[in-house]
Image (tube, rainbow, N blue to C red):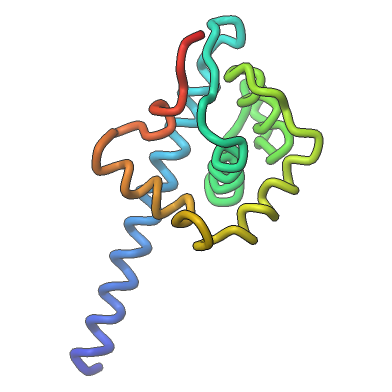
Length: 133
């Protein structure tokens, strides 16, 4: 194996480790949001698309179970998160994901890149978008 391919492999490993760290942080934030009472008066002030992208990333890459031991689906997790953040649950949440894929790099960087950058300033970036009413 030459030095160049070794460097590429090491760089890919670093990217993989960083992505795992980002997803684990997202997962822990989602768990913290699920612990909030729906009646506590919290509200999401970010975009619905960003919120749904985070939910989808967590559902697709991490195992997350409800209090009955059932694995969360995208729809159920969307419902439970929207309930706790006093956010209207979209009728078709997957359409937001389609919209997010179409907008990639057009007006703003992808969510994962923005989330990673936010991690340098805050240990819980999602909570920067949550306010108490």
